[in-house]
Length: 146
Image (tube, rainbow, N blue to C red; front, side):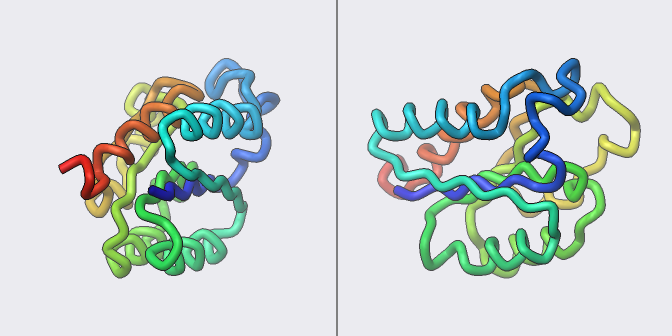
């Protein structure tokens, strides 16, 4: 099984960007934790990050040929990107929406996700552990687990 973790804008700043909201772990540290667990579970993971919406769309479009599940932290694009929503819907790729913070306990504009209706599920509010929880959820979507 192959899981593609896609990370949107400003997630390259984790560890220093608003640590009270997003924690002190860097994206690289989160990736290392996920990959260590994935190895023990026999799962391949790949992490990518972009501040560019179009690049994320392209990765989603190409993912069915290379990956089984997408774990997507679209960051601010969660609330604004019809393009990401349409790419997920067009590919039919099983996708999990994740967030470090509890978006429903924050500003009202963060309460609405444009991608949620085309995702299999949402994990939010567990800091870096959201990525670990998403790995377990991705495994549960595998045809071998059904």
